[in-house]
Amino acid sequence: MKWTRYLKDRFLYLFSFICFYFLSLYLFYIFRVSFLCVFLISFFFLFSFLFWFLYDYFKKKHFYDDLMAKLERLPQKYLLVELLERPSFLEGELLYQVLIESDKDMNEHIKTYQRKQKNFKEYLELWVHEIKTPLARCFLLLHQNRQPHAKELEQALMEIENHVDQVLYYARSEVSEKDYYIRKVNLKTIVNKVMVRNQDAFIYRKIHLELHDVDTDIYTDAKWLEFILNQIVQNSLKYCDKEEGRIVISKEIDSNGTKLSIWDNGIGIKKEELPRVFEKSFTGSNGRLGKVSTGIGLFICKNLCEKLGHQITIESKQNEYTKVVITFGNNPYYDVIERNE
Amino acid sequence: MMKILVIEDDLEIRKNLKQLLEEHGYQVYVIDDFKNILEDWKKKYQDTDLILLDIQIPYMNGELLLKELRKESSVPIMMVTSRSSELDEVLSMSYGADDYITKPYNPSILLLRIEAVLRRSKKEIQTLTYHHVTLNLQKCQLETKEKIIPLSKNEMRIFHFLLQHQGTIVSREEIMKYLWDTEEFIDDNTLTVNMSRIRKRLQEAGVENAIETKKGLGYILL
Image (tube, rainbow over all chains, first blue to last red; front, side, top):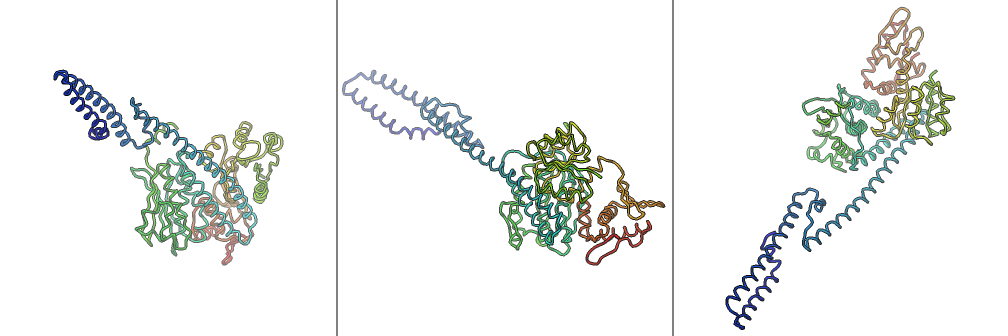
């Protein structure tokens, strides 16, 4: 708080005081009060005035400067009130009360939404689990009765299953609470599961799978990672249009951790679109090439990876290849888990 | 014959699962009344070789039932669930489940997993016979009175699959799908190579022209 600003705020007050002072001087002069008396009265008067002024100025300066500094430095501005000293002057007191009240109200407001979001997520999870039973029923029925369109139906069911999973993981990635479970798992087990799931595309479309040795342990949530890999592999399969479609999966271990890469020789991604592929609802020109694309898959992958502490990157050259790399870092925290296990 | 007890509350799934398992040579019991599963099991189904247990069943939580069953017996139990979080799986395994499979499952994979769990628990040598040749699944070899012919893993699996469908035509895709289900990711060329090798092995064992190629359709084991 600058003193000029403070004085300006009290201009009327100062002005009337000065007027009053000169008026008094004039009156003293008319009534012929002795000079010494006038001097002493003026002195006490001005002294006490100055004292009060400075006292008030510094008290307020202290409070407001503190307030502004904390406001500036605090990343979560809504926590400001928790850090303030309770002020000892009226305006400050009022401000303090207002802040507390509005904070409390906001908290309740947020709580309502959190509860709503949580309820919605719980319902979604429940729904997803419910829908899986009839899906399982359909798969079994189709397997038992090979009807003429069994294969097409199975394909459609698998698509439904995939979309259902996407809903589930979207909800999981958007909710702030932690509901993953990180432990040591074998990367090969997860990769194999994803491959088995996508076997039809490989077998019927004759896409060549080159699966290198990925037999290594990593720390992750196996189910989440399975979902992430499944999204990436399905993308690769979807855009692998060439005669000699190829997908290469390999790992690399360096000082930063384990890197899993999924490479395909599909249509690739335009250079200018590459930085945006992880954005929500971004479909790009490939998405408009008559392929169904929601622009959600990679967005969820990125979110889930961030939560799990993995890094996901993509590189591509149009009409040549696309390569997605997931890095499982060496987190010292996991060493602790390891030792305790 | 191996006996499997199916504890599943969805009527349609129960019916189809029973049919599926019976077709693959298992004797299947199902639970229709979920009120006294534990008592029923003690009275009637003590001799089962495997229990397929759904987590969400009426009256009682599947996990609780799993714990109770584990107190009584060490029969292999496979959990079936539509819950798909890692924590659910870890919990179930820690309660003593032998395997955990999530709905909707691929029926072929379910069968393979059941086979695997049973194999682990029984440890008896599994063999199949074809004419005078015996296929030893544990040792991965063909055996005749005179000699032993070792097979590669893929050769054994393909022959096993053909043997299961003896007398019917199986397409190349079906064979490949079976191998992919067992996590052997072979392609077209590898299959061709393996088929000719199997033919050679069978010849060595003294069976001539056992596998016939049906053009455009697949193979048939005579």
